[in-house]
Length: 558
Image (cartoon, rainbow, N blue to C red):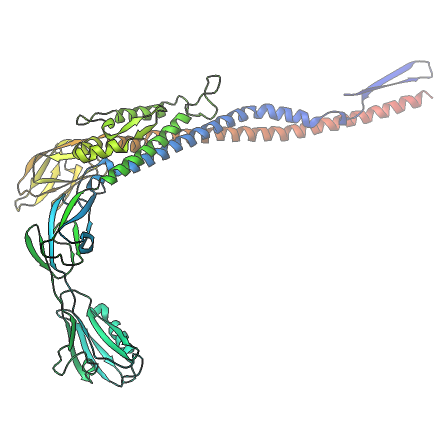
């Protein structure tokens, strides 16, 4: 505070000196209040820094979690080796090659589509004739748009199928008749069209849309429209049959067969043959159905990419600064959970299954410790030892009885004894392990592992008619192990989520402390502002009194 003094003489010759503060404006009240508030909120700032650090860790854990989800999703097709039409396993995918013997183009004679799980094998096919639909044409008409002048109703369809009544009026043209017939094609399976022979010659053509079936026609009232158009003669027979209806005739592996369609789906399970043309005498088509190993290679390439992406994130969290301490960005430096995940993945990659290792697949670590895939090594082993590759990578399940077939192994297969109970009528009534029937559900002949149990995802079918105990044996390969590791750690109940939840809960608690401290600081600030305002008022009052006394003394000295 600033002091002032004044001197005056009284009538008795005594000198009086007074002093005091000039005013309150010389004091920085705001600074005093802010200093007190800052001292109060210093702890909150420290806590907020902890919250920020925790948020960085949460983000890092979430990145690891996301990378692991990508890793196990990409491994799903390699984790099991179930072979059936519903399987999504890379080992169940099929590819077909078609060759020929003799002067015939394989691609011109046959095309194929194959479902997952189709039986692998070689076959020989010859095609005597392909299935065709009947096709007939009418007499030449001078115009396709002029009114015909015919009125009548006729019924049309395919032999053995549904028919529709078609009504023609006198104002309709040839094009109108064609359009009216085609409006009912979905019911009749007969399609009409117009062929322009010349600028003054137009013919209507009727074609069956289903193979090996004749077109049926009858006039029901009025003019006989098809007879008028020259499609039928006076007896109702077609006048010009362009193509006869016939069935497909072919021989597969020496067995002669006939079908009413060129799309053959019921000869080899999961295989559709599309017959395109007959094969000449003395020629044949050579078909080979095998595992589509390109799908296995593609899945492994995806695995390498996803594994390295996760590994790179782990490496980033282990970065050190120039002084040897953890880099500021490495918020999970030394984290035990992260280390446990990498150890588990490394142990899985270093597994030996069936006498094979990842090196047999062409997998190795380079000088940067990144996973690499030698595709030439992989191609060689896939062509020479596919069964070994399957065992090395996937989960496999076998049973001690041919009456219990494996439909699905699940991603975490188990080895156990399955106790099957069949009732007096020969129907499967329950499936249990160790006397516990809640572990599997039974529906007809299908046995499915209960959701949430260690058998979840496993499925079987039973063809037996008596109660018995069957041993189920499972093995896990490298891909299935890594799949489970990545899935477990990244799940909603996994170790990473546990860390995330713990940090989130802690941050909520810390934030509440920060809010409490800031609330108390705000209250303190308000109290100090009130208190210091009183100080200011008191100082101003004292200064005013001092000024009055000074004036009074000065007046007395005169």
